[in-house]
Image 1 (cartoon, rainbow, N blue to C red):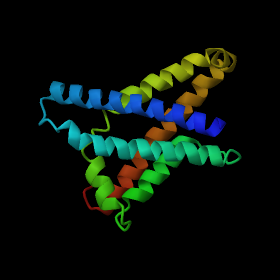
Image 2 (cartoon, helix red, strand yellow):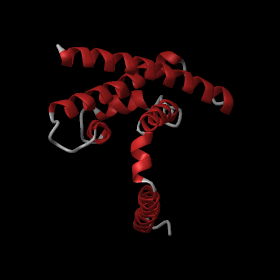
Image 3 (spheres, rainbow, N blue to C red):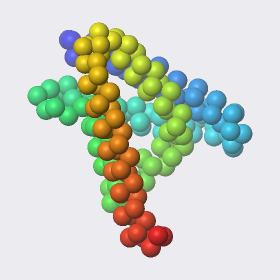
Length: 159
Protein backbone atom coordinates (compact mmCIF):
# COMPACT_ATOMS: atom_id res chain seq x y z
CA UNK A 1 0.00 0.00 0.00
CA UNK A 2 2.84 2.38 0.86
CA UNK A 3 4.54 1.72 -2.50
CA UNK A 4 1.27 2.47 -4.34
CA UNK A 5 0.85 5.74 -2.42
CA UNK A 6 4.46 6.69 -3.20
CA UNK A 7 3.95 5.88 -6.89
CA UNK A 8 0.79 8.00 -7.03
CA UNK A 9 2.58 10.91 -5.37
CA UNK A 10 5.55 10.54 -7.72
CA UNK A 11 3.15 10.48 -10.69
CA UNK A 12 1.52 13.71 -9.49
CA UNK A 13 4.92 15.35 -9.23
CA UNK A 14 5.86 14.08 -12.70
CA UNK A 15 2.66 15.60 -14.14
CA UNK A 16 3.53 18.96 -12.58
CA UNK A 17 7.09 18.70 -13.91
CA UNK A 18 5.74 17.81 -17.37
CA UNK A 19 3.55 20.92 -17.34
CA UNK A 20 6.48 23.05 -16.19
CA UNK A 21 8.58 21.67 -19.04
CA UNK A 22 5.82 22.45 -21.56
CA UNK A 23 5.58 26.01 -20.25
CA UNK A 24 9.37 26.32 -20.37
CA UNK A 25 9.38 25.01 -23.95
CA UNK A 26 6.79 27.56 -25.02
CA UNK A 27 8.59 30.47 -23.30
CA UNK A 28 11.95 29.44 -24.82
CA UNK A 29 10.37 29.34 -28.27
CA UNK A 30 8.81 32.78 -27.83
CA UNK A 31 12.05 34.33 -26.55
CA UNK A 32 14.26 32.80 -29.24
CA UNK A 33 11.74 33.41 -32.03
CA UNK A 34 12.32 29.89 -33.26
CA UNK A 35 9.77 27.97 -35.26
CA UNK A 36 7.08 26.92 -32.85
CA UNK A 37 6.75 23.18 -32.33
CA UNK A 38 3.12 22.37 -31.61
CA UNK A 39 2.48 21.19 -28.06
CA UNK A 40 0.97 17.99 -29.45
CA UNK A 41 4.37 17.08 -30.90
CA UNK A 42 6.17 17.85 -27.63
CA UNK A 43 3.86 15.86 -25.35
CA UNK A 44 4.95 12.35 -26.48
CA UNK A 45 8.62 13.27 -25.94
CA UNK A 46 7.94 14.69 -22.50
CA UNK A 47 5.89 11.61 -21.61
CA UNK A 48 8.78 9.39 -22.74
CA UNK A 49 11.19 11.36 -20.56
CA UNK A 50 8.85 11.23 -17.57
CA UNK A 51 8.37 7.50 -18.09
CA UNK A 52 12.14 7.01 -17.97
CA UNK A 53 12.20 9.08 -14.76
CA UNK A 54 9.44 7.01 -13.15
CA UNK A 55 11.15 3.78 -14.17
CA UNK A 56 14.43 4.96 -12.66
CA UNK A 57 12.69 5.86 -9.39
CA UNK A 58 11.08 2.41 -9.25
CA UNK A 59 14.40 0.67 -9.93
CA UNK A 60 15.99 2.73 -7.14
CA UNK A 61 13.18 1.66 -4.76
CA UNK A 62 13.47 -2.00 -5.73
CA UNK A 63 17.25 -2.01 -5.26
CA UNK A 64 17.75 0.08 -2.09
CA UNK A 65 21.03 -1.60 -1.14
CA UNK A 66 22.62 -0.67 -4.45
CA UNK A 67 24.22 2.76 -4.01
CA UNK A 68 23.29 3.99 -7.49
CA UNK A 69 21.23 7.22 -7.65
CA UNK A 70 17.95 7.42 -9.55
CA UNK A 71 19.47 10.07 -11.82
CA UNK A 72 22.13 7.59 -12.91
CA UNK A 73 19.45 4.97 -13.58
CA UNK A 74 17.54 7.48 -15.73
CA UNK A 75 20.69 8.29 -17.68
CA UNK A 76 21.47 4.60 -18.21
CA UNK A 77 17.90 3.78 -19.30
CA UNK A 78 17.81 6.71 -21.76
CA UNK A 79 21.23 5.72 -23.12
CA UNK A 80 20.09 2.14 -23.71
CA UNK A 81 16.81 3.24 -25.32
CA UNK A 82 18.62 5.59 -27.71
CA UNK A 83 21.52 3.36 -28.82
CA UNK A 84 21.49 2.99 -32.62
CA UNK A 85 21.26 -0.81 -32.56
CA UNK A 86 18.26 -0.84 -30.20
CA UNK A 87 14.81 -1.23 -31.78
CA UNK A 88 13.55 1.56 -29.51
CA UNK A 89 16.10 4.13 -30.71
CA UNK A 90 14.24 5.47 -33.74
CA UNK A 91 10.93 6.14 -32.02
CA UNK A 92 12.49 7.26 -28.71
CA UNK A 93 14.69 9.81 -30.47
CA UNK A 94 11.89 10.88 -32.82
CA UNK A 95 9.77 11.92 -29.86
CA UNK A 96 12.46 13.27 -27.55
CA UNK A 97 14.05 15.36 -30.32
CA UNK A 98 10.97 17.61 -30.14
CA UNK A 99 11.91 18.55 -26.57
CA UNK A 100 14.43 21.33 -25.99
CA UNK A 101 16.44 19.90 -23.12
CA UNK A 102 17.66 23.30 -21.98
CA UNK A 103 14.07 24.20 -21.09
CA UNK A 104 13.84 21.10 -18.88
CA UNK A 105 16.44 22.57 -16.53
CA UNK A 106 13.97 24.99 -14.94
CA UNK A 107 12.05 22.38 -12.90
CA UNK A 108 15.24 20.42 -12.24
CA UNK A 109 16.98 23.45 -10.76
CA UNK A 110 13.85 24.42 -8.83
CA UNK A 111 13.66 21.00 -7.17
CA UNK A 112 17.41 20.98 -6.56
CA UNK A 113 17.09 24.33 -4.80
CA UNK A 114 14.25 23.03 -2.65
CA UNK A 115 16.26 19.92 -1.82
CA UNK A 116 19.31 21.93 -0.80
CA UNK A 117 17.15 24.39 1.15
CA UNK A 118 15.72 21.53 3.20
CA UNK A 119 19.22 20.36 4.17
CA UNK A 120 20.79 23.69 5.05
CA UNK A 121 21.67 22.55 8.59
CA UNK A 122 23.57 19.57 7.22
CA UNK A 123 25.41 21.85 4.78
CA UNK A 124 26.47 24.10 7.67
CA UNK A 125 28.12 21.11 9.36
CA UNK A 126 30.15 20.36 6.23
CA UNK A 127 31.27 24.02 5.97
CA UNK A 128 34.63 24.63 4.28
CA UNK A 129 35.03 20.99 3.22
CA UNK A 130 32.20 21.45 0.71
CA UNK A 131 34.07 24.31 -0.97
CA UNK A 132 37.21 22.20 -1.44
CA UNK A 133 35.22 19.25 -2.78
CA UNK A 134 33.27 21.52 -5.15
CA UNK A 135 36.43 23.08 -6.53
CA UNK A 136 37.97 19.63 -7.05
CA UNK A 137 34.84 18.41 -8.84
CA UNK A 138 34.65 21.49 -11.07
CA UNK A 139 38.32 21.28 -12.02
CA UNK A 140 38.11 17.53 -12.61
CA UNK A 141 34.98 17.89 -14.72
CA UNK A 142 36.52 20.70 -16.77
CA UNK A 143 39.76 18.88 -17.52
CA UNK A 144 37.96 15.56 -18.03
CA UNK A 145 35.63 17.16 -20.58
CA UNK A 146 38.53 18.91 -22.29
CA UNK A 147 40.46 15.63 -22.49
CA UNK A 148 37.52 13.74 -24.01
CA UNK A 149 36.88 16.57 -26.50
CA UNK A 150 40.57 16.66 -27.46
CA UNK A 151 40.68 12.90 -28.09
CA UNK A 152 37.47 12.84 -30.14
CA UNK A 153 38.39 15.89 -32.22
CA UNK A 154 41.84 14.38 -32.87
CA UNK A 155 40.33 11.01 -33.86
CA UNK A 156 38.00 12.77 -36.30
CA UNK A 157 40.90 14.73 -37.77
CA UNK A 158 39.34 18.10 -36.95
CA UNK A 159 42.43 19.21 -35.01
